Image 1 (tube, rainbow, N blue to C red):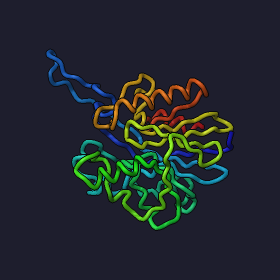
Image 2 (cartoon, rainbow, N blue to C red):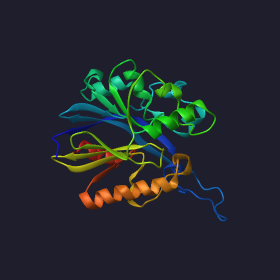
Image 3 (cartoon, rainbow, N blue to C red):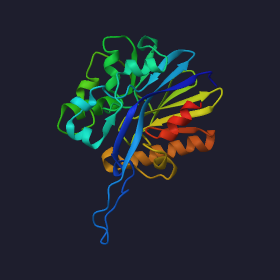
Length: 263
């Protein structure tokens, strides 16, 4: 068990059609062929992990100009992001300076999670990312195939990449990086053994909201790279909870953000 603290860094709100969040949430029928769309709000947040060996930032969030041209207009319309501020400002609000960060764990490289990497360009701050994520991000951003949620300008920078290759890698005491493919090929979760809170696994966008995890209800197709891999990663999280009474933290759920504040 490690004596570490977790501080969530609030980065705004995403509003989107609930069909993205829960597959088949709003379905038409013969009696109701045009059902009303349900929109949902979800927080965007990063986490500072104050570990005895390093001050670690989990994810870097969205670009402060996502609403004014940095994000493609079609994507911004589908996933409206409000409350945008520079990473440096949101860190300062939480009591940290950019210079306090010793390394970054990048869960994945989608545009709402990785755009703050600009703040670490030209520095020697290690950026942990899974090999499969880095490859898929470049493939997506540099060709007409892949996933449109990767923007080359977010990550094609002078960064000190620290590439993770395995399914589980421990880089700090009682902190393990866990490969959770499904949402993307290289999604990384962070498993911590905390002295006060026990086992905590920050699963990120493996589960957008608690319903994805608790009822095994996958996200909509646009948010899944591979449904089969998603179910396999889901089983891994369930096993962690069953065997270690782990607290599973989802990526965009206000309830989980509130739980993090209490750890």
